[in-house]
Length: 118
Image (cartoon, rainbow, N blue to C red; front, side, top):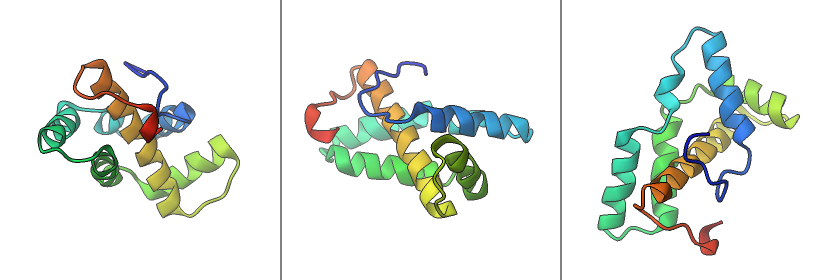
């Protein structure tokens, strides 16, 4: 994944498989790629002095609006072989996307990921 350090992303397959599933269904996967707006959210939150946990929570909620829970459940089952409800699957994929976005922000020198938040 682009600018991913692996410091926070635990299961990149969830992201890859979800994006592939969107493509298979004729949907635009770019809606889930970290955008300038996502990076701006991080940068503005840092300037406000918000904690990394609060920033992560805001990112997760931002991504949840872009994730289809039905697709998320299917992908989560395929990748992990675990059966979870749609909301949980969407949340866990949003968490991975948020982690990736934070890794990108670190690569852009906007934040510094410490061992504390891993």
